[in-house]
Length: 199
Length: 199
Image 1 (cartoon, each protein chain N blue to C red):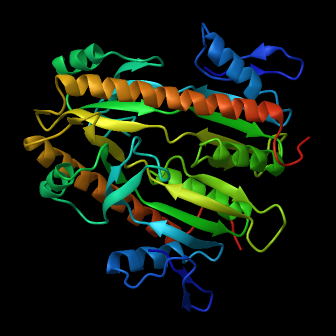
Image 2 (image 1 turned 90 degrees about the vertical axis):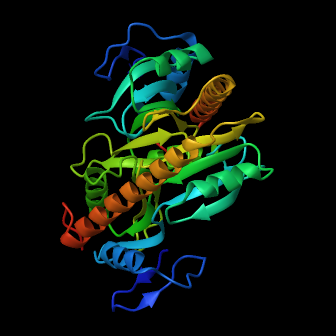
């Protein structure tokens, strides 16, 4: 969903993938996340629900692929339809929000990490450091643990059916909503100011 | 499992929890992870399988608690026993290895992050920076994505039974083994030297 808000308030996309449409929620969140002068988002996802065909739910390459993806709540019918297709192994995967920021100084990065952790984005961290000394000191990945991966079909066995599909879909939707709540709180926190002094 | 190997080769525990026994695998891994002069482990887990009673599998506090924990493979009977108890909601959770390091310089941290990412520890990052300027510049969290959380009992519904338990246990054990493989490769890599020059 990410786009970059320049210093003069001009919008320009930093992500490789062009975004044709931003829903009002994502638009507001991005504005707030980019309101701090020492931080800029470079990519982001507000959280999503996917069906993954692959041996492991965490794989991205090789024999693994996404066969269904949405950023909105699902119905049990989505799961039933996935299971009825010849996908195997098949996993339901709910992923929390993930945002990448460029930070201007170590203080900006530390302030963002403090805010992220206290708003429920544990395991956030600086994933790369600019050792050459450009305008940006590092890239911070902010990620929420609001996720789970549950097998739907594994080793030739159907792992969920009937009322179990309704239970799974409901819990997946609630996990998605919990991620959104945390993202909104983080965005508000960034907008309100961080713990350490930044440029 | 973590303990700290001092500069003179003396062992001293840094973790709050005293470790009574280290298996040979963990012992060797820790020696390798601590063989770099600019890095020291401060806490670590080689990966584990847990049963969690709680609304969400990622929660640690509040109404959530671990009702079973092991660092070794499980049998389907472990899952059946968990389900037969009055725990609810109940999740099976497999977690990959996680190690915290202190790094002496940004170069050491960057070298470790490079090695971690190429050995399958994505989402690793610097989780705190020492802005006061002590001997250590930062703390790096190295974590593998080799994990999944699958509900066993949710909203009053039993989510797995019969052959599904055997399938779940087998896949959980394989995820645990995959985490171990990545940890061993990372430890070997740290022992062999990192990409950037460190003290």
